Image (tube, rainbow, N blue to C red; front, side, top):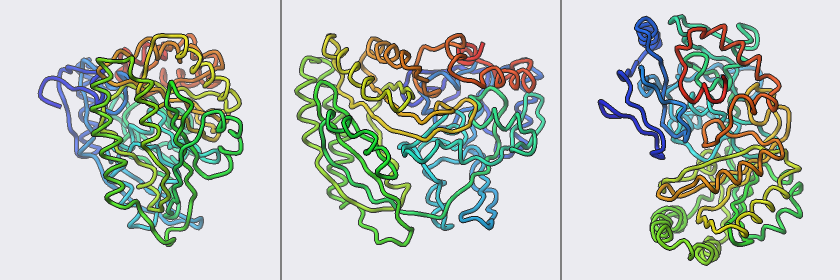
Length: 437
């Protein structure tokens, strides 16, 4: 942030607030919110700015929680693992190594680790794995600063309705100050990456999704080629066999970032070349087999800027949905160089979770930030909506409260909690009005 304007990572959302604030304590955070409310200003918080939506945009006070970071406490319990209370601004790429040094880990993670823990929770960040829920399912308690500046603790046993709503709170209820996470004993992951064909993967989708702890694949549009990733959980003391540094540089930096950036710049001018480029790209990434600390395997380096939309659909609808996306691409003149990412996750009971009440498959589509994404995203959104798809809260979509309500059984309960705890709409912005009002 500079003194006037904030931009998100993808440069598709920006804000010019009345002022910025960077509290370093919960008391300072409370003061900033109270001051803003007294002045009649809206308040929003920002972490890493990795949401593609305008979730953090405000014309009032924009609060960065970067100075409110670190672990507050670790409580060992009779169960394996520990309850770890973390300040909201803590970045995942700082938290994970710290947990490892304590013999702990988060049960599941997404593939981006630059996010703040509060931002990841608030927008419904998830990982992959048919037996594992999103990050919000790991939350056991929250400390939230409300619109009047009061500091409130909530859990399943204290202010339970606030807790149920705030596990994925969308920034609509207050500002999270701390989160208590149920962490598990540290573990490693054996990652097996290999090329395959889309039809073959779909023919065995249940076996693929449930036959390994964490399964995902990347489909290269305009081809039938995919790159699969199968991660198996192992004890922390399992022998490590990390990616060779040279191989890692070639695959993860040169091919996936530096060269990929250059390719996207070129095909932005010559989109007709994209199908052939995708065919070549899908062959360039060969099989790998390595074992490393869990958080190192989960995370990927993403330095090529893009725009993203992701939909959660019922697992059983995945083959037909991908087939329809493929058919639309074949019929249209639209060309896309970014792979389509497909993951799975277990059903959960979090009110505003995209996996609430159903095992889910996630389809994420991307477009290079210098190219127009709207036609592609609109087509995929229409296909996903036909099977009761739910949009990721931190990624681009066009949904509104009227058509979101039927797919979330706790939608009105969430709005009632919002009415109770922020009746003056201190934490309101255009995005929340779109999805909640």
